[in-house]
Amino acid sequence: MTTYMLMYSIPEKAGGITSVMLNRSKLLAEKGYSCALLTLDDKNYDPLRAKLTNSGRLHKQVKIVNLYEELKMLYDVENTEIENKNTQTFEKLNLLNQEGFYIQKDEYEEKKYARYFKDNHYIMYKKWINGQLSHIDYFQNRKRIKRHVFQNKILRKEITFNDKNKMSEVKYLSNDGFCYLSYWYGDNENIVNIFYFDKNSKEVLNFKNNKAFHSYWLDKNLTSNDVLILDGIGTYPKVENMQNNDIKKIFTIHTNHFMSPYSYGAEIKPEFRNMLLNLKELDTLVVLTKEQKDDIIKQFGDYNNIKVIPNAISFEENLTQNIREKNSIIVLQRFVAMKNITHIISAINIVRKKVKDVKLHIYGTGTQKENYTKLIKKLKLQDNVFIHDYAFDIRALYTKASLSVLTSDYEGLPMSLLEAMSYGVPVISYPINYGPKSIIQNNINGIITKKKDNINELAKKIIHVLKKETLISQFSENARTTIKTNFSYEAVSKKWIELIDEKSQ
Image 1 (cartoon, rainbow, N blue to C red):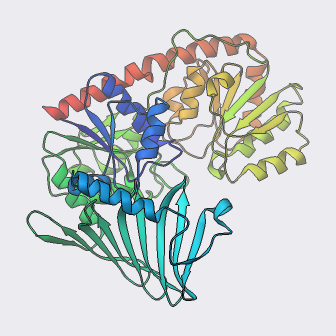
Image 2 (cartoon, helix red, strand yellow; image 1 turned 60 degrees about the vertical axis):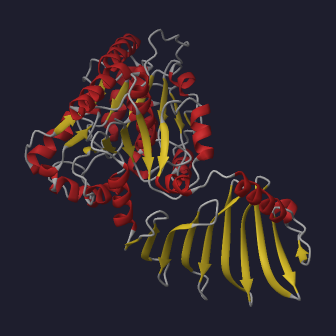
């Protein structure tokens, strides 16, 4: 039995849901469970596998299984003669100079490409990445007609273009040149046909879109003994379309499912609508908080198939504390509008009148950075508020801070809140859905404001906490106890193991 965790793609900067998957798979692997991350995008995962494994984020026993890589391995032939032929062909093509061509190579040193001409006609364009030939474009009458894409010194794709330079067909090739998969595209590069060629049976299967093809592949490659955890909501239609009902499926929601104002009674976000309307038919739905479970049951009914399993956070038992900087507030968030970081900056403008040496350090990246900088300048807060780039060593930052603040419009279960409290940093939060009310016990391990978007109240709460060092110490100790008891790897892994064991029976 293998537990597969499905999302469409794993991004290069693996945060958010990807971090949740990596943590969960590590927890299960350490307990002896076979698990894998399953992706459906067309990408070479070798570099990312190495990066995640070397950093320790991907457990060595956990595989990244990708649909297109699996097909490639299925049809590749183990044959020394074929391997030698591919290597020889590639080494010739990989050379910058090619006999019989005039070559424009003045951009090669800086941009790693070259153009090739014969009899004054533009014939070919080569592009190199990291010293290896990435692809060759072929031209006729100055129009691109074909591209050859190489991976690990093997021709893997042949892409044909129409007279408007749009893809018309993509052929996927095994190492012996067999085309096992062909995508046909319309004028706007929309998929019109997918043909899958079975080399053994000589059968050709036709699919009209990726939904149908990906569902077919999942049906064929997962068994009734496997457990499929759906982490990426975008893949829900493909899982719903599967014909193999013997596979145990666990659906998940990682965020607030409501549109603005993000509370019960609001419209459901489009991506969650079909799944929640189909709640009765789901094997199991996992949500992050009891609040969200209650809201879903209230609206869609109780079918005894919703489990609450929060995200897990690393908990350092014997935390070596730095000397905390007095009146130091830390915020680690994406720089996006829904995080309302401008509220925190505006609150500091009020706080500094009572706590003159208050310092707010904001870490992250995103589109709102310029707005923060302008507001800081407008309020003349340059001595109190500081913007920093994304931080990798969060431990060093949290163990120096006195307080953190959360002002988002909505969350699922904010990792920044869990991280802060795991390092003993109390949090003042707006009363948002979902997460803070499930983690923060008001005036015991942190503070939840009475109202959302009330900057004056937020400022008063910050002043109240900063003025009482004993309160910070009390909140800090209780915050760590909360995380250890309810959100540590050990606590959360027990819940996942219980659910997976239940599905395996």
